[in-house]
Amino acid sequence: MKLAILSCSPGCYSTRRLREAAVKRGHDVRVLNTLRFSIDVEPGNPALYYKALSLPRYDAVIPRIGASITYYGTAVVRQFEQMDVFCANSSNGISNSRDKLRSLQIFSRHQIGLPPTTFVRERSDVLPAIDRVGGAPVIIKLIEGTQGVGVILAETVKIAEAIIETLQTARQNVLVQKFIGESRGRDIRAFVVGDTVVAAMRRVAQPGEYRSNVHRGGRAEKVQLDDRYRETAVRAAQILGLRVAGVDMLESDDGPLLLEVNSSPGLQGIEGATKLDVAGAVIDYLAAQVDFPELDIRQRLTVSRGYGVAELFIPDGSEYVGKTIGASGLREKDINVLTLHRETTVIPNPRANRELQAGDRLLCFGKLESMRELVPAKALRARQPRVVKLQPSPKLP
Image (cartoon, rainbow, N blue to C red; front, side, top):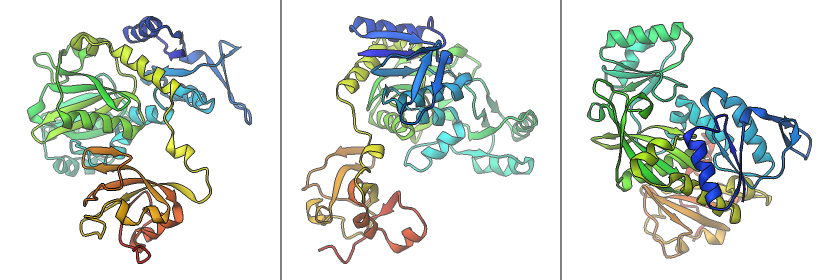
């Protein structure tokens, strides 16, 4: 495999470890400075130049895009995508992960634990917003802060109001988030590669500090996650379109609460805490994808006119509850179930004798007109075709 690591810091721990792991496995690897690329946009011939020279063909790319160069870095990654080079993380996934508000808005469409959060612009809206998240104390976050920078604990409403007013005066956009008292000074970092958590650590803040980031003196220790935390981490990465990610979660009394997803997670803290070869897991995953790439259903399965992908939801009381996939009549309507999502369980390529339950979500590929017929008229009028309730159709047996 010919591999490129995009990094402006070739000497940093994470870049060095990824390069060492690739060399150890016999791959041809090169570290390329993200800011030294030139992007040529030509019809039918997207191209990249590196230090003014035409870039040779690479099989895969690992983007290590710093927050300060997100715009240019994602443009470079996007160009690799146009050149059909496999990227460990998509340009869109990186952009989404960098904006805390945008990522939380995306997560809010899914059944995934989140701390109560609000975003305000007007001073008169601050106090009602704090009340909606449960009152003081609250956490105030800059939307684009990293490594604990721009995260402030406000113990009282008055302090919160003053901090928000000051930040808004400085033209900073902020989030107000409920303070989860039981997790004070602690959080979980799960390192996701593909559909697996390959390593996890608990970060504990130093005395007197509420931020647990290792960069702020926090202590890291290995932790064994239960299924709820592993599934939350993998789902969060996949929702944002990231194949390699560091997922931060709080340990609340109600289970995992998602804080944020990092598209360029550091390796030093988690490898030091777990003593695992996390860099090697990343390289092995990329090599497997280059040898046998996954199909991007969003781009590849819509080439046949009249066919596409949709997600169908089975509500409580539907006639499909209790029926098997084979007896549902979907296949007769040229609709194939690719994946069945049941609560936190994902069942790929479910068998025809799999019985459907209320709350199931079916990722289907098939004739769009047939799937459209299954959408209630009310949902069609509301223009919500992405996730629709699967209701009985008079045309089905």
